Length: 115
Image (cartoon, rainbow, N blue to C red):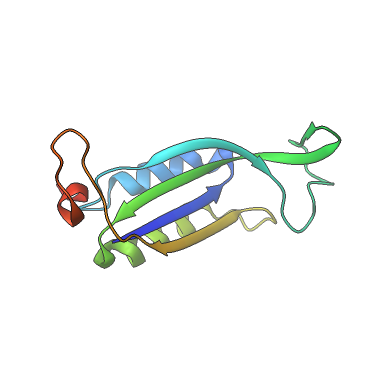
């Protein structure tokens, strides 16, 4: 199993989520509103906010746990649909997941993320 974390622009969220709905076998996505900065330190961003004198921009963090065989499809779907061609489009991170537990049934492993 893999975890995919993606940071995307808020205005691209609906396109990304719609496209992820089309990925056969993908069972869920968690979305969180986050703030941060990248290479430009949010200096020229129109949507920047300030926390204790630190400038940051709002973004959406997507978290997805999926089977290894879906990783390339999910990553390319996010990449294609979050891309604007402008600086600050976001990042995608892929990590290994050693276990998963479905709280309601006590199931463990890859069965917890499959349809």
